Image 1 (cartoon, rainbow, N blue to C red):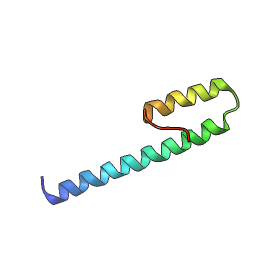
Image 2 (cartoon, rainbow, N blue to C red):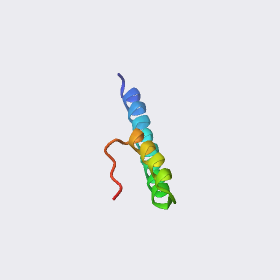
Image 3 (cartoon, helix red, strand yellow):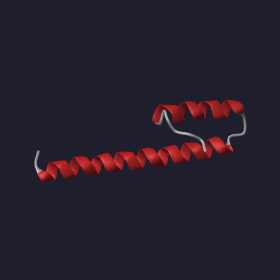
Image 4 (cartoon, rainbow, N blue to C red):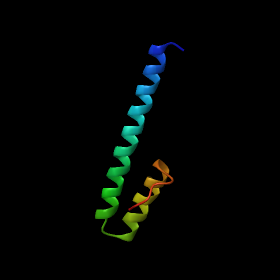
Length: 57
């Protein structure tokens, strides 16, 4: 693969990681502000799909 191809691939990987981190942060905020345990469970399931090893601390 050419240098340009590697750079393009790397940039897309970085963009995917940034998007995933933003989504994780957003879900954590929603979990903190959830009113009921049921809402928290739904959001936790979504968080586990995106990041299985994420912690809530």
